[in-house]
Every structure is written in structure tokens, then in C-alpha cells.
Amino acid sequence: MNNRPIPSRKKQAQKKDERLRKIGATGYNKPVRTPKHKTKSHAVVAKDGDGNTKLIRFGQQGVEGAGANPKTESEKRRRSSFKARHAKNISKGKMSAAYWADKTKW
Image 1 (cartoon, rainbow, N blue to C red):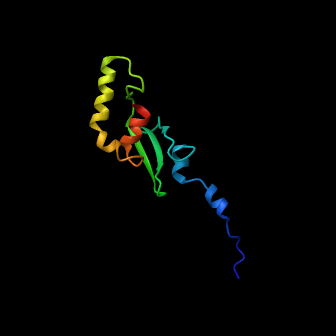
Image 2: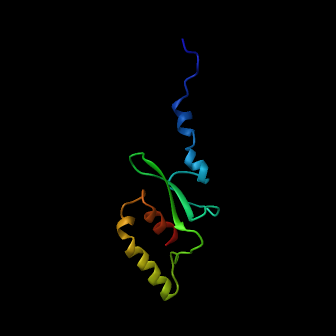
Image 3: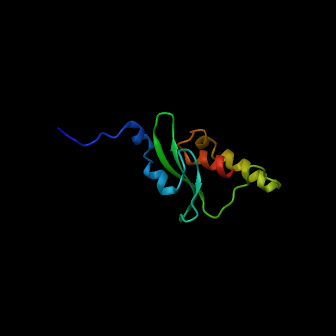
């Protein structure tokens, strides 16, 4: 007979996803800054309702968005242009980079 202990479901659930550890995230759907990444400013391990997970990197390194409360007229135009340009991809939901860029940077 096999004498190896069988890991409990609780321990398996507590085991952290390797992708979360790699980017330093505390959980799924929680974006983090990646200042050492060559091209992308943020990363997130996205998880949808079906249990699918995906590492998504988004945002151009070194560029600031207009923010949630744009003050100048040009920042307001940049924000609305971004949302119009990426509206189709933003509507795809959590599994797209545009969704996270819109939520985090704009």
C-alpha cells in the first residue's frame, strides 16, 4: 500500500499560484506596478468566473494616464480618446489588457 499522505483540499487551495508570486500580487484581479519590466508598467493575474486565469501585462512604461480626475482640457480629451479608441476591447472584460488599463490608469 502507498504510505504517502494525501494533501488535503484546504492545503491545495492555500498553495499560491506561481504567476501571483512572480509579479508580487496579493491575489487575483489585483493589479500591481512593475517598475523593473522593460516595456509594461503594470501586471495582473486575471481570473474570470469560469476559473480561467491569465497573466496580463498592460500600460506603457514611463507614461502617465490622465487619471481618474483630469484637470486640464487636454487631459480630458486624452482620457475620452483612449476610452473611445479601446471601447471594444474594454468591453471584453477582465481577460483583456484594455480593461485593466482603463480601470487602473485612466
